[in-house]
Image 1 (cartoon, rainbow, N blue to C red):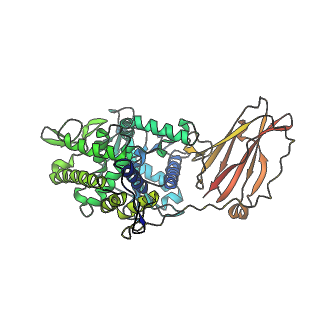
Image 2 (cartoon, rainbow, N blue to C red):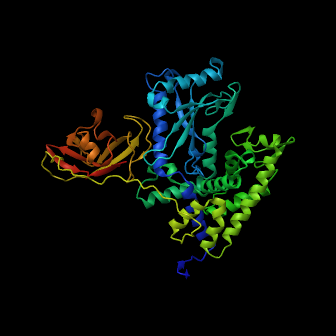
Image 3 (tube, rainbow, N blue to C red):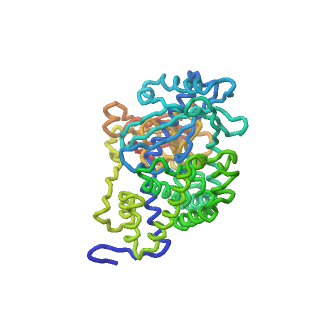
Length: 506
């Protein structure tokens, strides 16, 4: 429909409005390349803490994410120049009788300071260490908080003890168990969406990483958090904690497939179950939002000391219901968009409108989206010709995966058409129907200015790594578009070729 020269979309209840909410949440979400870069950075820090020359090695250090980054509920900072916050746990296998909180913190800090590039961005905090990454290569600024922790033997196998702000009392936590509980609350719809996504890209379900799938629960939490951020601007002292919002939303979620249905049900159920077990409870004269994996922990403990925070939460919940029911009742998507702009952010809704092909109001300025530009395939005349006669009677497929370091056991994600950042490692593997015995030769070809300047254009043929037939490791060192191809050699002839697998490095 057109009105006054502009396209106006008549709203079909739920389906169109749901798409608008999904697009808004997508605008709030952490971009894929930021997620990948951040993952490589914290894996790199973890590798350093547990390296063979580390004094921490005897304590089997494990570093992992917690909070919104682990749950898939990260939201973009309201102000573009602000930081993403990524919380990491540095878990050391030692008892609290063998250390103090201060000593534990110093042990982790001393190791971090031993590497120059880490020490340059390292900041001390009362209970943790902060790595402050500057904006570069299309990466926004972000903080990485590293919280030293030890096992909590009272909550095996994943319970931990963290230092408090005064380095005196041990604080209980269990981020792994909480994440498992959160994912269990959306298990049905997650599996359904993951299977559908795998089918759409002609891949096995196991090849689809969890973080690529976004459920209505995760989307609803992101929307609630952004609504909260805007509603409580200038009122930080009474702003509801993300853990309270996330816990109540997950308890209320019933695997709805539609984001608006999930959002409506969550807010209504929280209000309807006020004071009841499992939601906002009233226990022995105190208000509680229980940790679902540790009933003795109260996420809303400060509500009892500051009752205005509980009252603010109740008022905000009503505002959420009002805002979204009003937006959903509008006749057109454009009207719904205008209604949501003040409560979810004008730039957020402008991006959602642009994604849906809607006209963007002059009041909604669309922020510039940084596009990752990778140089196209360059001159490859340096590429050598195959050395063997061809008798292509068999087939071979070539797959690749991304790792933080060479020969690492933990795969981060599968290589796809997206670009890969520098300083990662790629593991390539062949799958062939050629009967043994046979050999595999790999042709690795770099193109572009960076590789040329470094005299690393390559183009020769290489054997598999460490004598493992059909596996080749390569690092991502030079910006540009490159390729790798596998040749199966049997009885002096090439009996199968994989074809080129292109790798874009940003």
